[in-house]
Each structure stands twice: as C-alpha cells, then as structure tokens.
Length: 525
Ligand code: C2E
Ligand code: CA
Ligand code: CA
Image (cartoon, rainbow, N blue to C red; front, side):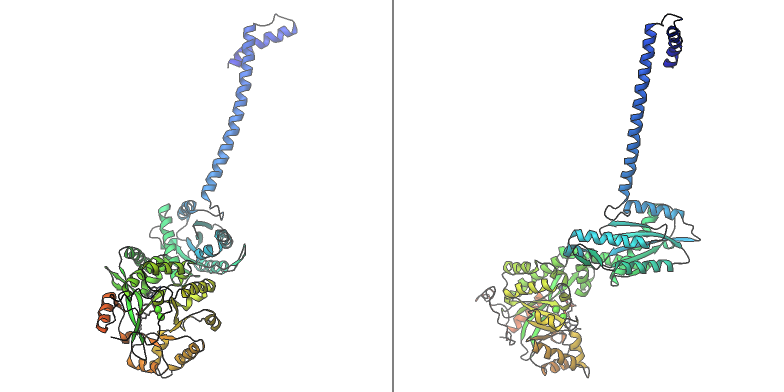
C-alpha cells in the first residue's frame, strides 16, 4: 500500500520531469519510493528462501516417517506400521464377502545359523527369506519383520476360499526351504507358520486392538507348528491357546524352579550283571514342583533346552551330584546325561573339568552319556570335546544306542568307552525273536571293542536272557526306581558302601588317574 501510495505520488512527477515538463518531485518522496522497492525485493527473496526451506523440511519429514515405518534390513514394514495398517485393513473389509488372513512366520533354528556362520550370513538369510515371502503375496498383501527372525503378513481373501491361503502358506514353506546362497556357501533354513483369520475375531472393527488380537492368534498357531516339528503351517484353533498358556506356565515354573533349587538329582543303580554287584549310579533329573509334584525329565528337559536354561540347570544338577557322590564308596561311578544343546557349547568340556576341580571330584569316577542325536550336529566339536574329557580320565558312553542311526564309520571314528543299548531293544527280549537285535548289537560292540550297558531291565526273565548273552552292566526297574540322594545313602549304608572318610578314599584318586573300572565293581562289605 505504501508502495502504491508513494509510487502514485512520485511516478507521474518523475515522468513529467523526465520529459522536461515539470521540476523533479520531492527528494524525500523519491527516496521513500526507492526504499519501498528495496524492501519489496528483499521480502520476495526471503519468501523464496523460506518456501524452499519448508519444502525440504516436508520432504525430510516424509522420509523420516517412511524410514520409521520400514525394517531397514529387509525393506518390509515393521511392527508399528504393520499393526496400524492391519487395524485399517480390518476396518475396510466387507464381513459378508472378504476376510483377512494374518500369517505369522518364524525361522526355525535361526540362532544356530547366526552362531555357526556369523551375523552377516544371518542377515543375508533374513533378507532372502523376506524376498521369497514377498514374491508370494497377492495384491493388497503386506509383509513386515517384527524383529529378529519373526515375520508377519496380512492378506485379504475371499471368506469362502480359505484354500487360497493354504496354497500360499504351502508355497511359502517350500520356497523358503530352498537353499540360500550366502557369503561362504549355501544355508538351509525352514520356517514355521501360524495363520489366523479375521473371521476368528469375536468382533471385527477398526483399530490396533483387533489387529493385535489377530496377530496373537496367528502367533499361537505358529508355536503349535513349531511344537509339531517345525517346517509346516497350522491354522489357529481355540484349544491351542490353553496349551500355550500351560506351556508358558511350565516355562516360568522351570525358571523359578531352577532359582529355587526345585530340581533334584535322582539316582538309578547300575549293576554288573554277572556278579550282581553295584558299580555306580546314573543321575536322572527330577523336578520336585510344589504345584505339580515330581515331574520327569521328558517334560522339562526339552523346554529347558528351548528356553536356553539347560546349561544352567545341568550344571546345578551335576554340582549337586558331585557332592552327593563324594559320600559314596570311591569305586562307585557317577553317570550324567548331557543334552545335544549343551554339546554345541565349545567350552563345555572346559566347564565340566573346572567343575570337577571345584568340587574335588575325581574325573575317573565320572561317566558322561551322550545320545546318538548329538553325532548328527557337529561331529568335529563332539570329537574334540570327547577327546578333552577323556584326556582327563572322564569316560564317555553312547546312550540310547540303536535309536539314532549313527553310521558304523562314525562310531569307529569317535573314541567312546561304552555303548548303552536302548531299553526299547531290551524290553523286546520278552518277545520270541527279541534276542536277534540285541545279539546283533552285542556282536557289533564286540567288533568295536566297546563294553555295553543294557538299559531298562524290568524283570528276572530279561535279566536271565541278558546274562546268557555275555558280560555287561545293566540297569532298570528290576533293581529299583531312581531314588533321591538320602535313599541312596541308606542303600549304600546297608551294603557298607559309604565313603570311608577316615581313610580319605574320596580324594585319594587323583585327577586324570587311570580308573579302576573292572566289571566286578564294588563288592558289598
Ligand atoms: P535315559 O538316559 O535313557 O534314562 C533312562 C530312563 O529310563 C529314565 O527315565 C529311567 O527312569 C527310565 N528307566 C529306567 N529303568 C527302566 C525300566 O526298567 N523300564 C522303563 N520303561 N524305563 C526305565 P527318566 O528318568 O524319565 O529320564 C528320561 C530321559 O531324560 C533320560 O533317558 C535322559 O535322556 C533324560 N535326562 C534325565 N536326566 C537328565 C539330565 O540331567 N540332563 C539331560 N540332558 N537329560 C536328562
Ligand atoms: Ca542316560
Ligand atoms: Ca538311555
């Protein structure tokens, strides 16, 4: 306005003065006009700069929002953006016609891939998996990585054609199972899948609450798939929810039970069949749960392995067992079971030897039982572990022999001290042709120069049959059930087989000494 005002006053005067028709206009007014023009130019320039700044900020804000919504490793969505998107998708479906399937995907044994090959390879596997899954999604499908090795996707489908989702899940399982080419070689990975449908929600509707409920149901289906053996898919069903709740209670019960010392070593007698002498005990873990009573290892060992506490649990049990066994006659051996999961720890042998020193327990009284399934994992690690332990005098037995398909060459290449014939074969001795397999195993062990222990001797008939087959050790319910430490003490006291503290026979056997392992064992009295 100022410009218009001053310009209308000054400009006509200036034009007339320029033409020589009048005197030049007032100097103050002319200067005011010039100042005005300068101000306008300055303002215009500032406006342009501000505008550019605003545009740049909007773009970077959009980029930041986009980056906050994606998973940087795989480029798919993340938990936050997926939940929001699923909430919206749920609000948009027509309940009569269409439905939404949520597919929860978890890589099987991904931790092992990371541990064995490093995180770089782990990342490559995650990226390749995301790519393979994304390619199978129909239009409108969304894929997200929730973190770690967990993926989830949402896809619309016709509510009367759930088969379509079955087909997609089947293809996902197949496609991901193809080897992934990574730095340094090919990696095999599989996935477990759980599927839930919006039809299974009590009430559909917009919002993250419904989205989260649906994601949780898919997750439950996925856990079920894991439990059924992995590399497969399951649709969510209501009873799975109770199973999972029970499983969660067991998991937290096990964690608390370990801290509270509720896991106790029980002991099963091992006998020299020929002489009938007691030669040692196998430690078998029991959970004395205040809520559930005495729980067997078949229930809690697999869970302890899954939740990563098997090492801690086993160490506590062994520590207790070493202390218990120090009260027994020094000729009695102690056998402990080791889980395949523990054998993946390259420091396992060192840890065990350190424990022996800490508890002042002679290595030559210890017998470590490993199952055949350990041999399939990493024979190299197993061999070096066995060698370190044997160098210190610990004996190594191959447990459940005959159930794990180990090859003869594997058996020959690993320095075992003993084979334990699985109780499945021993119970067959009751049958008419039951002796044939045990005979075969015995002649094989003879060929390998390995002494044997027969497990699961349940009655006199089986015992007699075994005695006719050669000399061996044996154990089983025929000699009594596994019993707690105080019962073992009573049993040993009656036989005069307690440690002779005065003569100090507990510590007389030095670390690494050659053990006295004559099958004659410790004779009563
Ligand atoms: P296993 O090493 O084969 O142990 C022998 C199992 O057979 C024990 O079951 C024992 O109670 C049972 N048994 C003994 N005699 C007889 C018999 O005459 N007939 C029958 N039918 N069974 C008999 P339990 O104590 O339930 O242990 C099951 C498995 O759990 C063990 O099998 C072992 O593999 C594992 N386990 C036990 N304690 C531990 C532990 O501290 N750590 C690890 N990693 N595994 C353990
Ligand atoms: Ca065993
Ligand atoms: Ca066994």
